[in-house]
Image 1 (cartoon, rainbow, N blue to C red):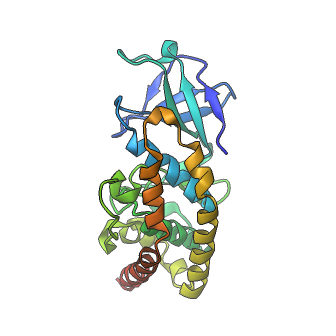
Image 2 (spheres, helix red, strand yellow):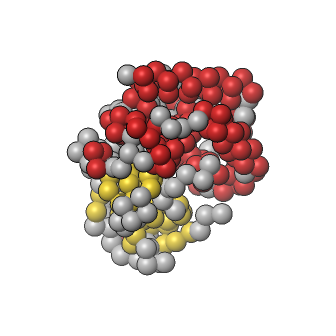
Image 3 (cartoon, one colour):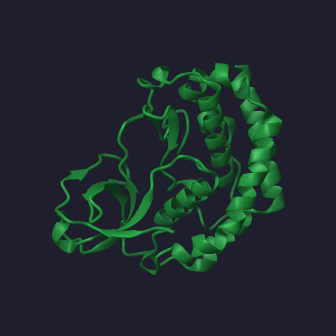
Length: 258
């Protein structure tokens, strides 16, 4: 399901964000933006990132291709770090980051509005707290006129594995963002019954993928499989799924009416 590649040169770029991801040139001659275990303990945010991207694929959301990246100790330029197994996202070309400066250039088309709603609904379902008005965590592929969803480390209410999931609020989602405002014209042409059918289809596909998802989580990350299984079971709990849809509908209509 996910291939493994190796670093082939010293790492020269670290992105100045909270997770400090690295840009790594790999053995398949592609560059990957890599996140890695920050401590020697269990890598819960890494597990969230991996589960999130695999679930997003079952929802047929456009997202960078993932890979496991083995970073050689000789290529790691930071003191005290040995070889690590990172999770990489293949670096995409012809994309721009969506932010308050660039969001005004996104075409307000029904197709793109539908993509944003699907991403928003996915975030409600997996309780992704990191895609909101202040942080879109989206890119726009200018060559294909398509939204690209990125960053899943904050699903399960920011990787909170000790407690049951809680629903997102209206103001803490992409529905309260400037990009939603930009796409409002296209939003008005979206049909909730059609989105509801899409939701059901995605849930079914995701449920069929659970075994494969559990099997690809690296043992090096020290995550007990039972913990991930527990979170996935919560996602497919009937009450959670119904509450998610009801919450999404209310939040969508509230923000559409503003």
